[in-house]
Amino acid sequence: MAFALHSLFLLCGISGLLTGVWAFPSKISNGLFCPKGWTLLDCNCYVYQEEQRTFADAEAVCNILGGNLVSIHSGLENAVVQQLIVAGTNNDNEAWIGLHDSILNDDYIWTDGTVADFLNFATGEPNAANGNCVALDEMSGQWETAPCTDADEYVCIKEAQRLFH
Image (cartoon, rainbow, N blue to C red):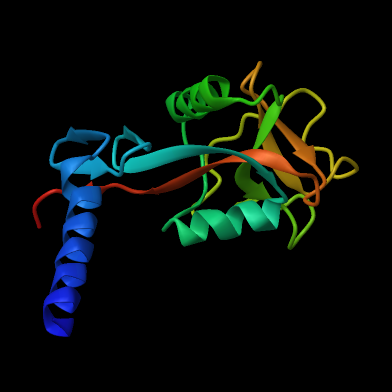
């Protein structure tokens, strides 16, 4: 009886894992997919998180989900992230993205280590007097600096998975 019960739990566990990974991808394109609830763009998956957290806590949650706070490398990507925030907003006016200058003032880097090859700061930004971390304004799509200890919503990014290896 114990063996049968153990086998049943194991089978249910495996079935649940496969269901979460294979049966419900949010979108499949060119053999790439994202988990349910994530948005696929090119080779990356994006998800908006409405629970407000500090910059460091938001990055930690994104790490747990297998990624980082979003890094943005083009106008199209910025527009997609802005739309994710607008669609999921809890009436907040900004959300964390992964850009910061916490290590060296005025040396902005992404939490995922990618090069800051696209910037979309609002007029008068970046402004270290406002803080060292960067949030995207949902109305304008532009970026603003803010104290890293502020609690804001955020967007995570991770690489899309291949359907077939």
